[in-house]
Image (cartoon, one colour):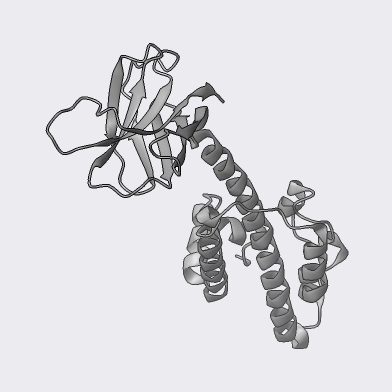
Length: 263
């Protein structure tokens, strides 16, 4: 049988089940078609591996124009494949092959070389267009997934210094993930050095009920908020110095404090 169509070679290289038993047998026995599929498969694997390296942008039509000019392609593939996805799947023009078949016998070898060159060029164009579409769609899907997975800021507070720590300042932010879990992230700057621990608290708006979230190490820390805690009730964020005395109660030595407000 004759060589496979360029479009079909490109689809085979991308893993699509488009070949019949007879065509698969031809691939197994034809060095030219096998070499083209191997080359295009490598290109497709390399291109797909770049999907998760960042958000992708669709190239402008000028990019395809330069590719078209550089490869010397014909009018049949003048349109930008991203502006018309169907163009990537249009049947290849086989008139060149028909003319080669009708040429005199003494020119058949030369015509075959030209035909293979044309086939390779068209095959690489189809593969390039297909990979661009995959990357554009994949990049868009990944950007959408990333946006859905990003936690939402539901509350924030500016933490003001207490008179005993006038240089201190801080901030707090409550983030909620898609599954409903919440975390409190706090930052603290300018607090005087101390041998005591720095502990992060949620305090009820009655000023009496307290929930310890943990110890702050460094200038920033993120702490899970226990399930069932009503932040409209426990709306005060407090960071205090706590001496190493075995007493879990608040020391009364607050560094900064602020009220959470819905974002």
